[in-house]
Length: 243
Ligand code: NDP
Image 1 (cartoon, rainbow, N blue to C red):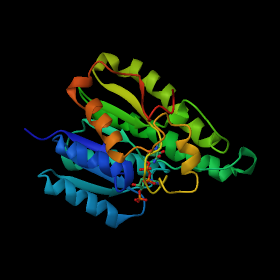
Image 2: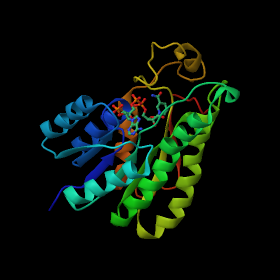
Image 3: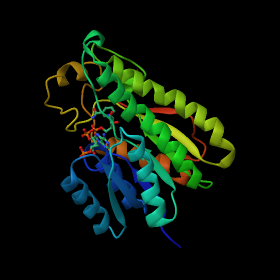
Image 4: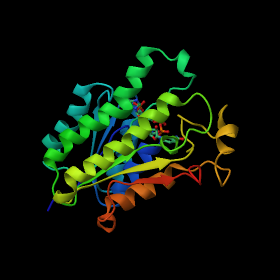
């Protein structure tokens, strides 16, 4: 029997890389996509191989439909199966809405929302009962606690509606779909020592940043058979930011 296969988009660094390593520990062979950073992608893939699992890296721009389709197609070509899709790649445009360009609006919609839709549409053609779709949203999809995050909050809120609808489509097939909503997590995108860190932390009940492992642990649970009765849900892992 072959191992189950998981795709993690944006798996080269940050939250995605932690999810990759955790799912490899859980027994998955892994396909991880990245945009630019081939070295980080290979280093993460090597950690998977060190755990005795297979890893494939795919350079694919998640903001392009071709890139979205390529990740699924390469996976099926290499492994002949797909069990779990984690849509993690995302960007965080910051600024007041009257200063955001149409190009910025399109870029964030394409990567944070359209990619999730296209990848889901392609992936479920290859999934069987027990399949898992897991989207990395944000606590800002539930609550926008300070100015400058309108585009980002909108894209992450969209994932909630999408997951609810897809849950209805795929429930009868035994495939679940959920959104994980991180609070502030210490990565290159949002360093705990960064400019806005103090402000963001002030909205967190614990007052602190979370770790990439906090998110990987939730994804690990959702991808497991234990979570088979959870679908269409948005699950905060946010130190209480949404509270
Ligand atoms: P990072 O910026 O640290 O990592 C981003 C990852 O996405 C990298 O692997 C990067 O690849 C990849 N990526 C970026 N642009 C593209 C693209 N166009 N196509 C394909 N891959 C791309 O981000 P985080 O780990 O912090 O965030 C991951 C997810 O978690 C995002 O969806 C983010 O919105 C969400 N999130 C993060 C929070 C945080 O506080 N960090 C809080 C809430 C949600 P490469 O290495 O090639 O650049």
